[in-house]
Each structure stands twice: as C-alpha cells, then as structure tokens.
Length: 310
Image 1 (spheres, rainbow, N blue to C red):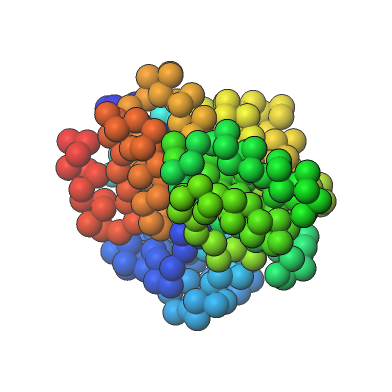
Image 2: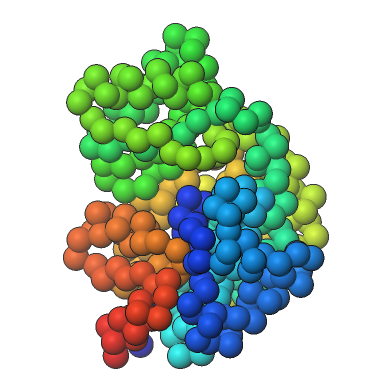
C-alpha cells in the first residue's frame, strides 16, 4: 500500500446535497450523518441535503456539516481497506484529520466545531471583516502590501491562508482589505472577494480562540495514532501541545503550502482529499506537479481512487 496522506477541506467548500449520494449507497456514511444528528440535537442532514444554502452557510452549521461529510467519506474508505499514513487539513479540516488519527472521537468533534463556528462568527460584527484571494503575486509582495496598508492606519489586514504558489488569502477589517486589494489590482493581479462571514485566521479572532479553550478542555483527546500536520506550525502535532495549537489556529494564518512541503520532504507522494470540492488537491498539484493528488466526494470519486490505488 502506498504512503497516503488524507487531506480534509475547510469552510467555503460546502454545497447543498454534499454527502447525500455516498450516504445513500454506504451504511457507514449514513451512520456518520445519523451520529451527527444525535450529537447536535437537530437534523444536520436536513440542512446539508435540503438547504437552504443560506442556512448551510452559517458558520456554526457549515463547520459541522463539512466535518460530517468528510468523516462519512473517511468511514467508506476505511471499509474498503484504504487508510492514511498521515493527515492534514485546511483550517476546519484539521479536526477531521484528528478524527482520522484517532485523537478525537467524531461525536466530540462535531459538537466542538459547532462551538468553534459560533465563536468565530460572534468575534466580529457582520460586515466588519472581509477576506479575498490574491492570485499570481509573490507572497512577499502581498505581505508587504498588507503591511503598507496598516502603516497608513487603514486597519488590520494580513495573509490568512498560504495556500500554494501564486495564491494566498488576505483577511482583516473590510476597509483595509479593500485598500490592499486595490494595490494588488494596480499591479495587474487578479483578486476575488470571498463569501466569508468573518476575518478568519487573523488577530481579530484571538478572543474566539481563547474562548474555544474551555470546549477543547472537554474534548477528551486521546494519543495520536498517525502524524497530523498543524496549520499553525506546518509541523507534526504532539499530544502535549494539541489544544494550544487548536486555540492558536483560530487567529493564526493557515500554512497549507508549508504543511504539504513538510510531507513531501518526508517522502509522501500520494494525497487524497476527502470532502466537498477539490481545492486542496489542486493546491497540492501547484505545489508539486509530479505527485499524485486525488479528490473524493461521491461514488465516482471513490471508484476512481480505488482504481488508482489498485
């Protein structure tokens, strides 16, 4: 069996109907959705599979919904004897990584990320913050642009996600983000405002991270069975620092590119994204076009993966 890295996506990848097909065909996946309903005390399935999209987009719904879909796919792969030798996730996806590594039970994780979503959304008023992707500009130039905006007193803006070469996400106070985007656009680079409800992974959410600590203390973490790369350090988690890094993760940038480079340096060459969309697989290919990067979100993806691994 190849050395496999399972990757789990974060917020923004959700869509109405995700996971419905795989749950309809595999009882293991259906049970994960049923388990989420029992743990949360309401029918998450009804929202995920029936919408409306506006409700699914609420952060405290989005986060458990994506986690549940990812873990449902994980259970199906486990049934087929496909298990990871390391895991990583983008933001919220780090929690699915911890479930895959046996450090966190799913029923605890789904409640934990609901609280995480609630705290992150409540950290700043609606409309106060913003986020945007910047494409085709060297990372150092984006960092300098953000620093220049702050020096002008226009507010806080910083890189929130280091995704892959030529793509980062900036976030912060709305006016500061707009000013940084104008400077990037003046250099002829493409920018896209993102439909997020808060400036995630910036210092504006430090209070939300600290508030999450009390819920993490009740999560009953168990020793990691697999290597899991931390968003904050781009290095492997240790059991002793797990909760502290999850607190920091809320307000610190996601170092996804560096995380993948760490795994590449350790000899991993096959990456499988589990969950809605295929953004992480595309990021991996932009980091190293020679590696194998696949995504699975439905039966067709499962069949393609099993064929590729045969």
